[in-house]
Amino acid sequence: MTTLAGNSLKPITPVSERRLKNHTSFAQTVANSLTMAYRGLVKFRRTPEQFMDVTLQPILFTVMFTYLFGGAISGSIAHYLPTIIPGVLVQTVITASVVTGVQLREDMDKGVFDRFRSLPIARIAPLSGALIADTLRYAIATAITFLTGIVMGWRPEGGVAGVVLGGLVVVVVAWCISWIFAFLGVIARTASSVQGISFMVLFPLTFLSNAFVPTSTLPGWLKWFTDVNPISHVITAVRNLCDAQPAGADLGWSLLGAVVVVAVFAPLTVRAYMRKA
Amino acid sequence: MTSTEYAVEARGLVKVFGQNRAVDGVDLTVKAGTVYGVLGPNGAGKTTTISMLATLLRPDGGEGRIFGHDVVREAQIVRQLIGVTGQYASVDEKLSANENLYIFGRLLGLSSKQAKAKGAELLEAFGLTDAATRPLAKFSGGMRRRLDLAASLIAQPPLIFLDEPTTGLDPRTRGQMWDTIRQLVATGSTVLLTTQYLDEADQLADRIAVIDAGKVVAEGTGDELKASIGTSSLILRLADTNETGEALRLIEQVFGVQGTPSPEAARITVPMSDADRVTDLLLAFRSAGIRLAELSVQKPTLDEVFLTITGHGVTEAEETTEEVLA
Image 1 (cartoon, chains in turn purple, yellow):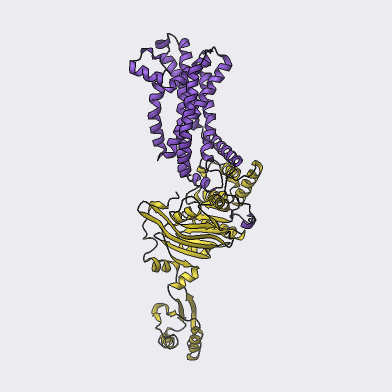
Image 2 (cartoon, rainbow over the protein chains, first blue to last red):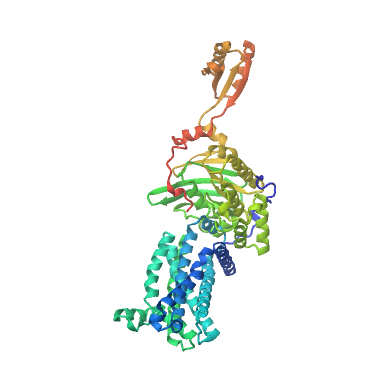
């Protein structure tokens, strides 16, 4: 083995000649966040199995639910596609946003997080970097779900523009919702507890919606819930955008809801995070 | 305010975890350009002390200054002056050595090109070039520790915290780590290291603080610490064991104390309070015609120091969980 560090270590700059400052500029915060986002992307590349929830899962769910429910609900596979594609899409992408919280918790428990905390970087960078990197995951899930649908014969009326717009809405909403899970990630004790709590919230929210079935046959109380469920509004908005229908109210409610989530959870998350970071 | 004479000044640092006063009023003063050893058993509060000085933990009491900058109020400045290598690898397990150093370099404000060059330079210096693109999962303990240290040196910090840098390393890798630490000091850095090994503190550190149950129980150079618990011993071996009786008589005459003979080795151990008297003894031996086969002076070991100061051996110390770098 080599001798360590031969004579190649250079003399350091004396403390008195260093320019030191006790605050982090906005430009540095942005730069640090982007570096942390880059780190997130390199990690994805190194561990492609962590990508499964946004690559294989959308294909699996789209194919599975379409063939399973298609005939029963809409009479045929082709007629079911305009209903199911936006439904599966919203479900998949919002589920993917849970991973933000889980991975944040995992990261904070690792030794490398101590190094981040000992570096003169923006405190918020590991959090903001993770949130930026995850938008790519949502975009991938969105693209794959749409592609699977098109391969299966889905021909959205809204054309490219409508589909792209619909996808954009999903990514934005998922990003906003990921703040909830980021918050859970910051305050929870373990990564598995983040996962547990998050799915307990998500399953009722995504399944008790208009994602897979028309709500008209549901019992009154359940129909009431699916109608007020914000996830239903997002799904309706995406369906309308893809089908060249006016998406007005649903789109408005979706975006408003998303903004409210960010307004509530971003400060909570940042505060809890800064206390630990 | 800003002093560059002292790399670390800690006054009455306290950290409480629940009922446990993990660090209970620690004072440390480390001169710039030296190696300072914090010696103590598991759970003594070494890591917690370092964590507070490295801005990772907020002290519950007392204050810490790094080159004159307060660790709480000027945390971001302190972070520009330190490098921290924890007990557990503080690098990204899922990334390669290259990627790790690149990302840390970018975070520290290097351009993409500078960060790549710096990473390559450090990997070269630490003999990791061949493993640069391998996932860390395939790294040995020694390689990981080296990468960890390399990552702490990107910004060439004037103060480096090393938390048990050689724990779990084999003797050869340990020796390499010692060389590296000496080289770091040669570049102008100050090193504060913690260790459970008395030998390591003795070999590397200019000054040592012995810490036990969250308190500094002794402080000084290795020699001072050893001297503090008692005198060195003069060890004599006679050429002719028949002269032992006469030799003991002369020793008592010169030193005023009894020598302890060990018959089988023909050796006599004499507590040596005054080194100057040795000349008198040797002259007395010469005139009495007593010939010496061997003469040596033995200092007390740090093990004895530790035992004396803390009242218990290093290995007896209870292990607690708070040593984990928070």
